[in-house]
Image 1 (cartoon, rainbow, N blue to C red):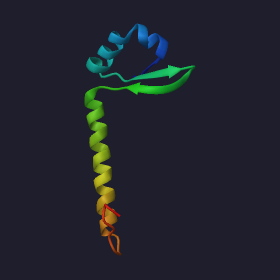
Image 2: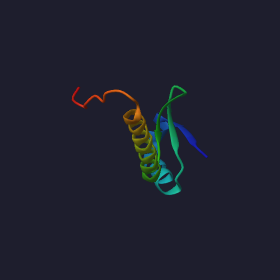
Image 3: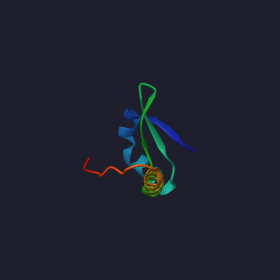
Image 4: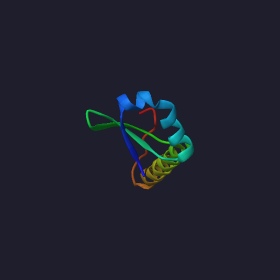
Length: 76
């Protein structure tokens, strides 16, 4: 379950929120004027998201390299 809390309230309870995210593995959405502005996630979740992004980037690069035509160097 994801917790939603205002940034003003988060300032007051910062240590508790960090513990909830880090040890309880519960994401927290920070809001300002009722709108989501940021999210706090555990390091494990961040690393997983980075691995997923890296995998997607690698697959996109493989697809681009397999396309016919001349490859363009990174400098170009």
